[in-house]
Image (tube, rainbow, N blue to C red; front, side, top):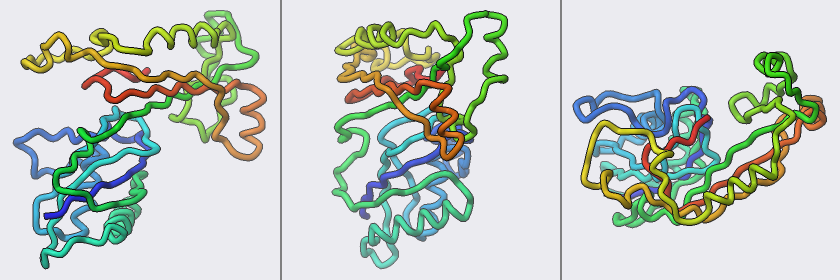
Length: 254
């Protein structure tokens, strides 16, 4: 048995998230609504002799994209020889392309059997993008519908949050972001679970360290005339958050 690390990227708009949602009693059922499930299905094209089970390094929720994430998988070939990593990349991308799935394997490498992509990860980075209208409005009644009236570049759909309120203060955001840097208890940012366990109920379970939060100017991902118009109407910003690990079921969406 040989272990392989897959470097992947994906557009998560139409997925429930990266992690499979089938339970133990349904393990044989294919889950095509998650990134993990689709990659495991693509791995069947390699015809391994073992049951395919991937392990992910980080979780992303429904609708969240990944520029670069990782997972590892054990694969056993019929002749017991290891798979060529480049072959794995090509076969999986061909299968994903055939099913028109917005998932791409960036590269594959063979790793020791003791390697674990989650526990051996050196850090994780999340990026949030938003755009603030340069000539926004303050009228509450108009604000309710203004996002449906205003120009939004089609290339940015599900990739950027557009804010039409002109009272937005970027310096106050920077100051607020600084409060979260360091070691804190993030219990109030975690969704409530009905299941109890000694691990999750431990007082230190919800304590995490945020290494960096960077609030910086961004730019439009639109192209051509759309990019020119978008840049003239909006100021783009990015929030980059870096940490060794985040909470399980931490609320990170809008």
